[in-house]
Length: 493
Ligand code: GDG
Image (spheres, rainbow, N blue to C red):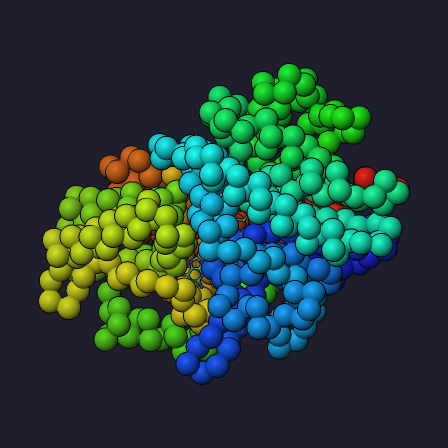
């Protein structure tokens, strides 16, 4: 099993004195004003959940957009602070954007153009020139922050994250002094669509040109790598090598490789065994909270790609078709709202509330109602108590690059009493063969699968969960990092 310590040693040996810089839009720590003074929060989201433990293990600089209302008051003159605040392990450097810049770059091009384009889920991407200009401008702000941190340095390894930063690699490469040795890598956390979808984007060529300034480009799945290379071929007329997954561009060879992201299995497994979790578990099953035979759980960042409405439709059908489960089954959905300034997300929040209300009204009897909807991020003890108590966890995206919730549930289900229901459209499905695979669009099949999963024998549940846990344990987030760093090392001379 690869550990945080192994990765630390790997970085030290392979990156031989290179300055280690991570760049992402989302910051791992946010300073917020509260009635009790300034507090530091960590955002809900796959990217920071996966990378913070890695940075804590390796040290370095993380460049990210400042998003907290107290962020500016908590940095030095170079816009830096040390994090985690309680036990500092690395430097966070913040990039500032005005509200207008955030509207165009983050809520605009990143999340109304690239996000729906790459997920290809029947939501029209918005092709707006002012969003595109804002995206270009904000990428220059990130490139400038990186330039400040690499000034006078001989060698640096810069690791870009996600679809917000498609242009920054080229800006950084072009702006670097000739004798500076820069190794640039990018991990794209969402799917890459097929070339015919990608080429709908009027600025497809500029994005590819920006990305190809990297030495290494990582995706979760081999199919996303192939889609990316096919986009390069169609848009730029360059023939990639589909065998090696390499492509030659401007005299350099770029490696495009799959690295399925994962979670810190050991830490989650330990946290799930905390005495606080055990206390919460008793509360969860207590007569005044959930006194029913079966519990299902769903945990999501509220997003139309996560298939939350599709899940509720299936629960509705399940209760209709198998009435013996009424008054017996409760589904707890924890939803952390995100991107709430975007109209599609506002609408989704309303649709979710309406769906919960409608289904609960249809079936409620005395104290019992089938769906408990908890809006906002759950505290870890409650989350892990739910993960340990639930008979099933439903992860039903209509499209998802990987999905970390599935792997977190597996890591926390220490008693092997729960079953994972997983959409065939989640990247994680390629690895997690012992999950119950569902199609979120197939209401009837999904409803039947809920019944079959609840009826599954404890022995079969245990067999499946043991095998899933062994897979996630072997393929943890440190393995992901170590595989990525080993590939980066091929560019280090
Ligand atoms: C992108 C890709 C890819 C969510 N709600 C609550 C909560 N969360 C935490 C989960 C998990 C994270 O947020 C969500 O991660 P996902 O992987 O599901 O999704 P995205 O944010 O869309 O991430 C995705 C990922 O990048 C990594 O590459 O897997 O495919 O879309 O960590 O635990 N946490 C708590 N309460 C909540 O209500 N405590």
